[in-house]
Image (cartoon, rainbow, N blue to C red; front, side, top):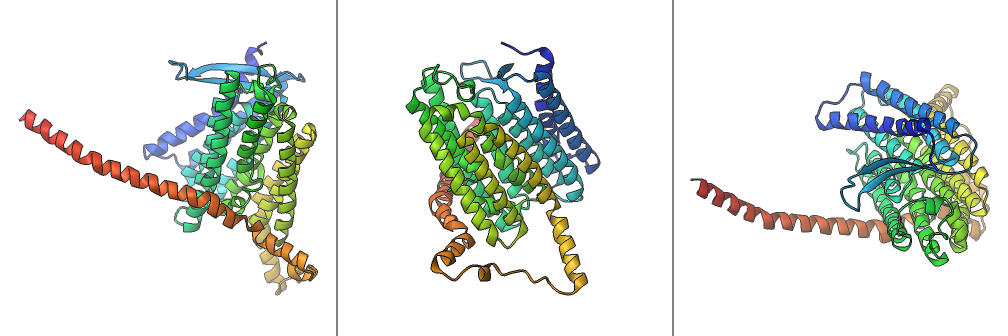
Length: 450
């Protein structure tokens, strides 16, 4: 069954608006002719507004049905069997999350226009923001694994590049590499799930995963469990669930608006949304569903304890966000899907407000302290804890963020960096080996011409 033409057009307009912004700003930057702030800010705000309006109208046009409808817009590079079909799968959940994403992106774009005024990377920021919004809309509306993976990659790439936005700072670049290292694990898991789905079901349609028809397509419980676990690994990396939580506070090196849209409202919830979409698959794989519940509960407990001992507001907000993300994941595992989505939407809007207002709150607090002439008598976190050994160790573990940094360095970041250095040396060796051959060929050609 297919949907009517207006819905098809509205969804296309909603997805195409940020993509056109990304392409236009990106081409202007590549040609070294970036648009001025007078044009970039209004264009970004207009694109996000059009996308949000179109997706809200699409949600209204969809109505109150419960059936997911496929929308096809042809294919890209379809000259061979491996071409990527551009397909969307729309229902109330996907359209609501897409509209929410566009609305939040519009607020952040308007805020960023003033916050980054006269910043050297102003145009680069909006290119990456448009890339992110394009990716998150593809994740929300994906109708096949290829579209889902492209959107997933756009979200991850723009996220890492914005962490390293102030690339003159060594800490920003180092933390961006840490984010990339973790994201590569999630990307590998996502790609493995896609390959396995294609192998066992003969298709890459996400309707098998998100529509509850996996068993009808011949996907056994064992295969469904493996695919679900791979998706859970991808979600854990993207949403900073245990044991991949330690990169989250390090990602706060980027500008405040990017922290708000990525790690306060949208990016960190992308994994939760993917679990919501894959709920029928989790119901077919009880072991994977149990794993989701354990990860959600453990992450919520870990983040709730850790946020109490953070000394800066952005890290405290990051772990507070992670606490709620863990609870949302736990709600999905229990089966409270409607509550989980309402929780997700409300928390995304609330954290967006907190992140965007954090600099003003700190400024007002410092101004109040200077006016009074003294600092408030804040209770010392250490003194509040009883002196027994168990709680002292708990405090130390929270202060060290569960010692996940050292584990992540040893088992993820360092192997990733070693592989990168090895590939760099191989590339240099190949260039040195090929260069003399090219020079000899050029000399022979010149001799023949003479």
